Length: 104
Image 1 (cartoon, rainbow, N blue to C red):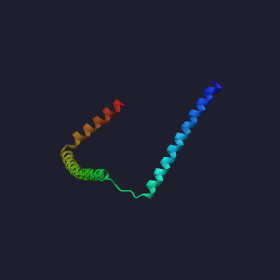
Image 2 (cartoon, one colour):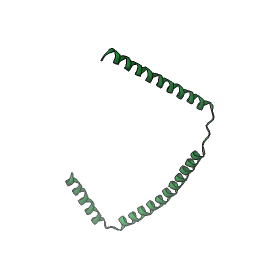
Image 3 (cartoon, one colour):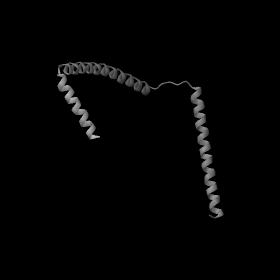
Image 4 (tube, rainbow, N blue to C red):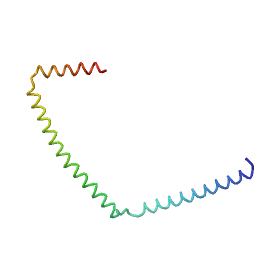
């Protein structure tokens, strides 16, 4: 690398440093200004918040419905298990365990 190339590269680096310094100073000025001014939500922020609240309400309603469905399912399964003969249930369970062991 010649001395001329080094000088050009050094000038480019100085220009980049000056640009970055100016950007940093403007960012700090904007942050200082935002700290001094009160935060006011915009209309779009309020709409977004209302949408999120509505989604949460729907999720809670769906959760209550799902809980009811799970309760019904477990009651039905409990009744089915009680109706099964004990010997058949144990035999099927034992076969499942043996089959699971053989697959390992």
